Image (cartoon, rainbow, N blue to C red):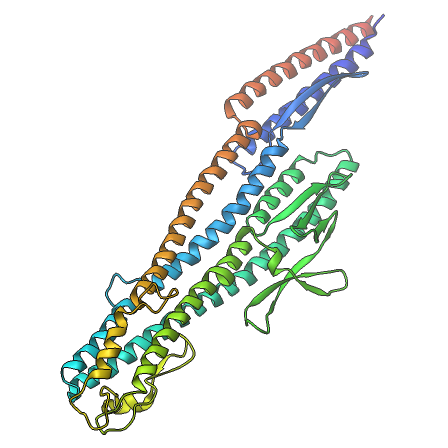
Length: 450
């Protein structure tokens, strides 16, 4: 026969179970707006001593991994969009003061000189136009280098953020194991780790897995460890002696740095490296090719000509590329040294000037298929297309991440309506158990009095 003490013990377990259920539900409600929080379902089970309630984390590992992967692509695309927008501004021709306009004015200056080779005003305007053209090349080259330097600064900051996240994950891994050993709820630690992994993925491409203790382990894409249990490795940056730009390195247990720049392709760091080392490098090479082609073509003809004093023409341009292209100092100081004539003493001869002016329509680039202007317009179009592609991808990925988060929230998120209903249910159950306890108390008093 069941004793009153047994019934009291069972009722007490019911009170404790319903109180635990209320606490779990209240915690869900308190975190309704906490990003990345995984709802806990109340699991009430029968035990030898009555009833027990525990919280079970509602979690979809597949969705969580998908969000991290999408964040990796989104982080890369966001960086590419940001820097390509900056590059596009450099090549903006909408104000009529870009490189295209400078080239047009330069060729027109030679054409004007054909009409009157002895006109000092035309010569001065040509020298000034040539200087403007060289300065335009210099400016674009310097601006591209400045963007690369800015990307370097962002890489250093991003690497510091990566290291901070790795340390936090390693610390949470240790706390999770301790909490689990003490029988404490580990849901909050797991949620925090998942949020940090998602943030880390937006910075760099990584691989993750769980060890036997349920801790999150992280490696770089090439397999180098970043977090193993409670141990974190770090990344660093160092200046590449050849390029003068920042390399990303992985530091091993002995403090030895290994360059991993070429192994990083995702996240913000991957986007930074893609724009800095691939896209901008291509634009710089094409810009240099254009500058060198103009300098060589003009110099080849100019050295065959004669100036107003009947002296043989020297080089018109100096420099090795867009960065240091310049008009010869002697010509800037004295435009009469421009060699427009094809014969000594023929001051009215503009044959060389006409030949140089004709270069504007000569197919000298892209294996003899493009003029200077067509080649440059192709470069500007290529940059515009890259910006458009990056922008479209960014918008698509942003929508994809939002959709995945909505899916995760539909599984793990908190519904205030549902939690409020559950809360009322557990409160009523608690009140019923309390009434039973009150009745048992009165029965005990009666028995004692008897």
